[in-house]
Image (cartoon, rainbow, N blue to C red; front, side, top):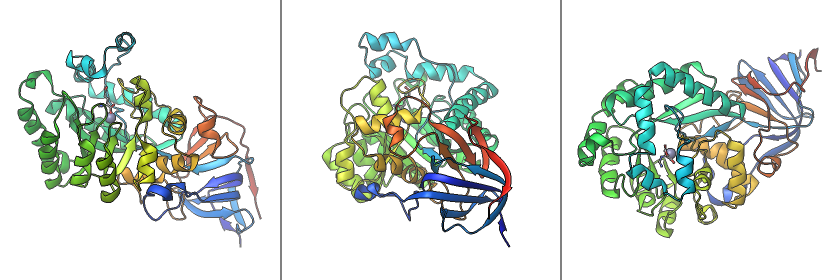
Length: 427
Ligand SMILES: N=CN[C@@H](CCC(=O)O)C(=O)O
Ligand SMILES: [Zn+2]
């Protein structure tokens, strides 16, 4: 008897399974399992079959989707975003054009601190609606799992408000959200002359955050004029003792040594890394700390020098890519654009880019076992692309290539009606 499944995707031109037993480091990032002329069967929200059409057993389904030779992949994972925030910062564009540096705007009370003011003023519901709008857009780009940082409160009440919004969105939005506590994102005005006392106040929140399951990771912005390497080390060591995995905004603008610190503390990821030293890169390769690179930010900050992705990969580092979506240094949800930046500015190959946005991105936020791969028995988070092959996305830039997005086997975003759903049986 033909096995009954809920959805059958047939006539897939190219299928990337991204199947992997762990994060892919260095040269392994060149590996890609590509199945030509493939079929995927979905039952109870999970993948029931994946393979060539020829090898597919006869299935029965009320929903057969003819993929018309298109590319099909796992849902993308965005492992570094600041998606919950109030307001916007378009007025900073003119300052940028005049050449005022990012850290100077922050020093003058703008930048992150401007978003802090707007986030403090917003109600929980306002923040929820605004973040939902941005998440809908991310979903439309084929992103099915997202990391979300707090860090625009810099006080107990607003940091908790942001984390609660992320939790509510995780429960209500098709995208899965993974939360990071970034209370140490900047020094608030109230603590201008006493950053240590501020860090203490943020650390005092950790027990409550753990109890209420409001975040899995603790992050800090280690940067000139923000937190020093020494302050970051003490802060993160304490967070680790309290059972949190660690992340660092490391060497984004000035090469202070945040990369080395991330490796030393066994952080799950070190993010940005534009100024990472040779030693830092070597240490990342040894510690297995994932390098989350954010070329959209480097572009938007108007920098000429990008993170040394080639050196990292050549030396055996595990690299992931993310949008860094936020209202200041990278206001875009367009992860396809990040693919193109990764190709042209980081000189990453298409194979490395796909690994960096699926398998490795999932491992960078502790979701390696559930997201970023299409494997029998896993949840069916799948994207059908209006593209003939995986090379096409970094190549044709600046636009949205998604045809349809499935989350747990259900279509949650459908941009084009060219796929025919037919009521029939394939045997
Ligand atoms: N650099 C620190 N944090 C963010 C930017 C936040 C902002 O400018 O609002 C980042 O990752 O780029
Ligand atoms: Zn960030």
